[in-house]
Length: 169
Picture (tube, rainbow, N blue to C red):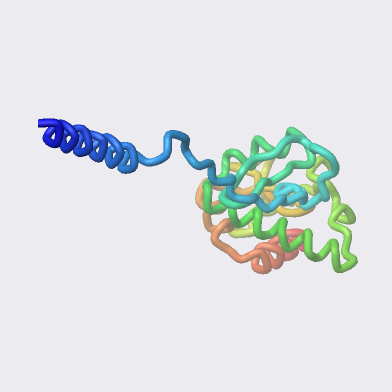
């Protein structure tokens, strides 16, 4: 009879022990947060951002800093794909700055040159036009709602060429 009791106690101990092992550790293992790459060139103006700047935002694997609070609002209106494009341009600007070309040599958004000729249609734009987009040192005005999406599909080089042509008119 004692043998049977001993076997029952041993079996119960094995069950309790195996269920504790199956449940795993009582505390969760904390994994470190993925490291974000800091982008300290404003994606709107192309200016270097010093200190905390005008705030920051996480976009994918990047922590993007803004030169002033006014730049964050237009950035927030962009689609995720366009935000990532702006971040990529800012990263290239950062690399150019390290190579000796300082990004703040360009005019800031606050002193941007207005381009009053639509870069897509070539038409003169009155007032603000249908929409406005800041590209580097230029505030580009569009004559109708169809032109800005067409402009946004262009490469950065093509945009610069369109802006240069619009400035000559």
